[in-house]
Length: 134
Image 1 (cartoon, one colour):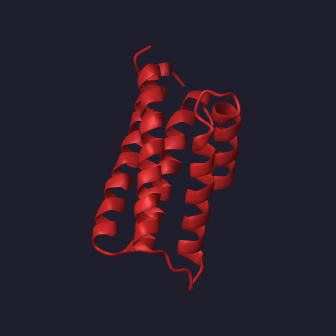
Image 2 (cartoon, one colour; image 1 turned 30 degrees about the vertical axis):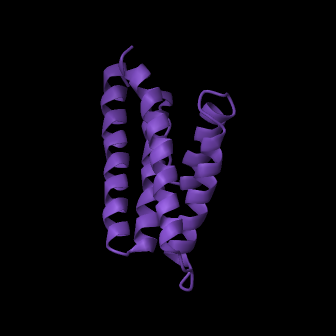
Image 3 (cartoon, rainbow, N blue to C red; image 1 turned 90 degrees about the horizontal axis):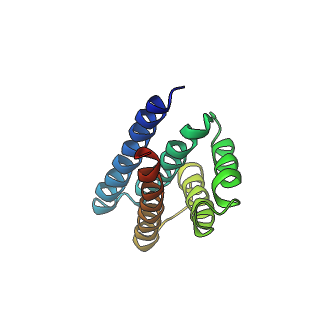
């Protein structure tokens, strides 16, 4: 894949991540806390995929994306270790929200999910901006 194509695909995935953040905010405002948490997680997921484009890596499994992202960008110190904690919590809450019929998420938890997802997307966007301007 040509570098310009990687940049284009990465930008599409980053925009998808940002759209998920917006959707999360809308759902949060409407009181749909589980759905908001879901969209916050997917913002994180698509942001990771936006970075992995440059490694020509993708996976249909969320665990594959998470594992590869951690290996290449967190363990190497390219991105902050705090992101790893954000990923863990986002994934756990999203899994419980989507699959546990009796899981209850509070408004404050949903707000925190969104804030943490925004933090991660911003850090990734900052990193990607450097790659886009090469």
